[in-house]
Image 1 (spheres, helix red, strand yellow):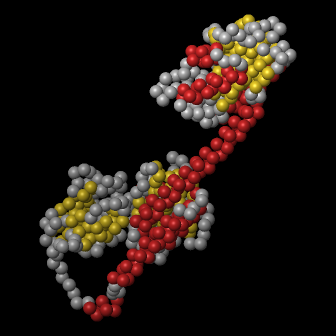
Image 2 (cartoon, rainbow, N blue to C red; image 1 turned 135 degrees about the vertical axis):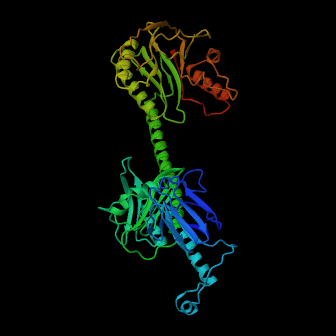
Length: 533
């Protein structure tokens, strides 16, 4: 006797030879292994004897049913061709295998056949298959037109009803681990209101790994008490999967007499869910693209706002001359730059680098710059200004957020530079005689880590023609394709030959771009040169 699966997860049919028997269950030693939690380790036995073919329940937890009649423990049920055997999510139909020699008794019912049996021609069969295929193609086209999740759900449940014979369908999404669900779409005849509707948890659990959980009319064994409580007599539940992750369910059930349900309803629903899974993934991808565009717009706006805070590129006065370049990377910059005239003879310079990239670093940069600007305008010396901004940042930022700072005040009358190097370190002293000096090592703590950190001023004598060139770490750390860094020594050599502050920044940027081999540098780029004329 041949056993053909007609409902349930994918499974090949099998043959029971005359005079033999097959053990069916979940255990690996079974002849026919059904890998499902609702199947007992040794569920039932199929035995072929001279008396016929029998199904014998082995005391399984959920039992079997033959033609909707539940078997009892150890009972022997004689099987006939065309019987339906239900166990767990599977339904098998008995029959004969093609090519097998089976001797059966026939009766003369030609008169009844002529009156009652409807014959399907090959053209009728072809037309039916074409109709099912067309319906599936149309459903796929509709589902892929969805522009949002609600629309996808509405199209999915309508297609499911059109293709299965059920009149009640829902698209559900898991909401929490306690079994709560979100109803995305619901259709019950002409009603779209799911208020007060409940759904079988056992059916949902049966489909949670992407399988199709099916229940024929009257088959309640294996599906829990909720099936009986809800008076469900037939149901299908299929999981919507994206990259092997469950994202939703397609749920159909019948609680009243339905029009005839299609024999391939389970397969049709599974095909719909695969198409809906692809449509769901495309919707999420579209949402991510829209978010990315919005993010890029926000970053662009942030970069434009940053440019408003940067002083003009070239400054030449009676006392001071300066030049600078400020080039953010692919995101909003975390570099900080400010040139602040304090009087005719005094000029403040602020350069910094915020940890991290993007909008968060840019906001921290803007807050720090504004705070320092205000302090220096009001007369604070560099040490006082840095200490104040350090306490401000440390008490308000996350533990992993900090910045390096270089803050200096040039005094042309005193021919003196008073400065604080709080962990920055990247600067050079270009003397009027054409030599370049490495600066002293930074002696200040990073800003934003410890609110109680103390800072002290350092002084440097400057003469007319002397310049200070300060740059971000992206300059010395820029690499060639061979991963060799530009380094600080090349910076010293270059600025020593440069005639002015404007040329300092232009030549240094050109040299680093040539070193990288392309105009897009790896990091934010800030270069500033300021000195006495």
